[in-house]
Amino acid sequence: MNWLKKSLLFVISISFFLSFGQKKLENLDSLYSQILKTPDTPKKVKAILDLNLKSHYLRPDFVEKALETATKIYDIDGIAQAYNTKGFMAKRKNDFLKSVEYYKRALGFLEKSSDTLLKTICLNNLGVSLRKLNDEKMAYKYYVQALKLAKRNKNNKQIARILNGIGNVFVNTEEYKKALYYFKKSLDLEFKNKNLRGQEYNFANIGEVYIYTKQYDSAEHYLKKSLNLAKIIYQSRQPGIEYNLLAYLYKNKGDYLQAIYYYDQAIPILEKQNIKRYTANSYINRGLSELPFKRFKEAKRDIQKGLVIAKSINSKENISLAYEALVQYYSHLNDYKKALDAHIMAKKFHDSIVNVIAKNSIISTQILYETKEKDEKIKQLAYEKELEKSASLRNYWLMIGIAVFSSLLILFLYLFFSLRRKNKDLELEQKNSEIHSYVLKIKELEQQMKNNGATKIDINAKLKEMDLTKREIDVLKLIAEGYTNDQIAEKMFISKNTVKSHIKNIYLKLDVKNRIQVVKKLQGN
Image (cartoon, rainbow, N blue to C red; front, side, top):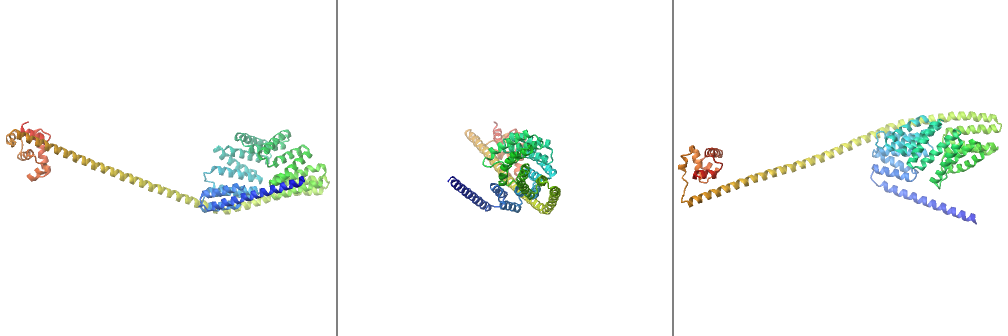
């Protein structure tokens, strides 16, 4: 009855997760359809790649569309990001040669990019893939480039990851002292970053180094720290790698039963997570751990299973380990001929793997060479488009500048002429006021003369006392009678300038400043 309940509960759970997964997939497709309707812009490219990230990198069609759109609009950063994503997806499938190709293409587009974070990530990822291909020299080269860039930008998160990668390079080259130095530096940074996953990785790596250096107590201490952290972080997902390393520890200590126990824990988890490198390693080492108990059938089965997995991913170290394990297996059976054959195969297959990697590297290099021209053309077109965009922008701002300058000039001229006209009006108004004042004073003087019983100013008597010419006297008489300059010029048939010249001379000789003073002078005042 309990079995029936458990079975029913299991079926219901599976149905729920399948329906949930289907619903999530439909939501992603719906979002993707909406994004496709938007204009082709760098923002659209980023949205598609972010959607792929939400699908846990399970939608290569999204990435291809993003790459197609980015290429169409010459979005260099978008193209680089798409190739970096393709590289990561190839790496997850253990296709490290393909991932190297994609990462190198991404870096080609990132040469002049301002996106230093993406460049750092890409360099680090390239280092990881090359390390998986056992090309430690080139892996170290790209790790160092990534580290310099990360330090320049003070990106502690990336620095910690890169230091961990460099540590793994030195594990592969069996330089364990250097490996420990980089793992511990990375661990210190991960504590500062409060990154539990980073701490877990470094604890595991340090534990692994201590296994290789036969410091088993230290190894167990760090591996159990890593295991405890992994259980906290993942909760629903068991830490297969930690179980694998603990099993390896007990195998090296000679505690084969404990080793088999941990390998039995590790293998189902690693298979479920598709971590083939560690899966192959666990099968081979479990086979080796079974030999002391003379479980030859189980040992051979596990070693061969591990060998098949190792060959599928070209894992050189695991392939070598599998053949060496077969040497031990046949030696236990006293079948030294097969043991020798296995030893020869180990060497032969090792050379074969190296040759295959070299061949694939040549193919990869050829592909990169063939695509370089295309990539350079895209970059050139993108550059020309950027220049055109810059020129258009400059022309736009130049037109704006000219329009603003013209508007300011028109405004200035308008204000200038307005002020000038206003000043003219003020001058005219001032002159009219002065004339009006003169007229009033003249009328006032005329009234005074009438009141005194005089009808006319006796100019002749006064003129005898003044040193004036005949023309100046004529002008002076007309001034006394109240004529204006224009009227005097018209009456005497002379120009206005001549009138002004005579008036100036009269003012100097009579020592006066205006017409009122002239009239007063003639009156004897």
